[in-house]
Amino acid sequence: MTDFNQTALSRTLENVAPDHYIPAEKPFSTVIRKGQTIRIEDSYGQQAIDTLFYRADDYSERYSNQDTMRAQNAAYISTGTKIMSSEGRVMLTMTADSCGRHDTSAGACSCESNTVRFGHDTKYLHACRDNFVAEIARYGMGKRDIAPNINFFMNVPISPNGGMTIVDGISVPGDYVELKAEMDVLMVISNCPQINNPCNGFDPTPIRVLVWNEEA
Image (cartoon, rainbow, N blue to C red; front, side, top):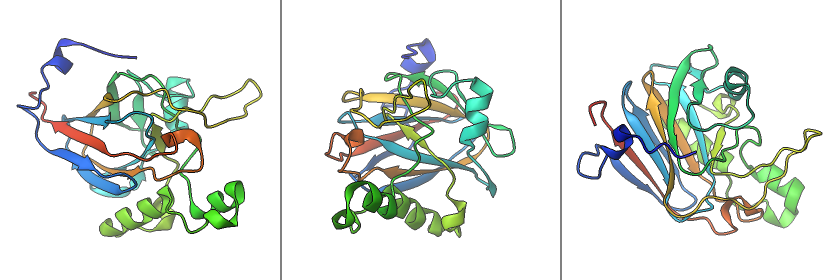
């Protein structure tokens, strides 16, 4: 849960480096340098933020949800979680979490899954997979480079028999996570456009991404 340590308190809008506002339903990407801290803010609450990480100088090394869950022996990620790569290396460490519920099992929505789950009339609707494809194309990657992702602030209870259900998010306006980069990473976000399940409260909203340098 929340980590209100002195280091976090020293990060202010006065010493922030990049400060990005990502509109509802849109993709975003940026490179985070080793030692920098990134804050992903759920500005309005109940907004799923689908996120991928790639090693900045070699995109073939990317986020691994399996290695991350195995390293923590936990299904969810929170303060202290080591974000692991497909090569078994630590990409980032989560240093603060004001919400406490972040999924890394349910994956990203797609037009195809929308059609199966919600009916053929939803196929035209935009989806996270489309956002990811459009954004990673800027870096010379394609569909095969989309790995299972993190869903920050998405509430996915897991039942004793292993079943998963997407339910109402518990995040409130201003909730955030902070992660410190342990290597140079490319972060790719889809600010989820889903309106057919409660992951966004049926109302996608803007988010904010802030970056601080190591000395902040």
